[in-house]
Length: 65
Image 1 (tube, one colour):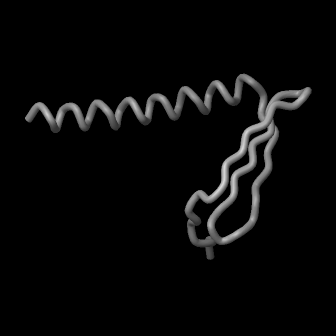
Image 2 (image 1 turned 135 degrees about the vertical axis):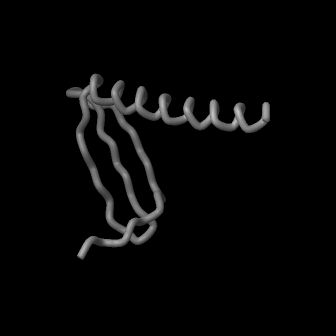
């Protein structure tokens, strides 16, 4: 059985000699630490931007109706 989805409680980003270190923690405890390259961070940023832009467009469309 899959573990229940936790709410984001912690997010840290730090630069290292080899790239970046991301730490993501949930509200029920536990911390996931991963190393990422600059290219991977760019992909994350682009994905978040696309998602947020789509949400903004939907809100603007509703406001115009």
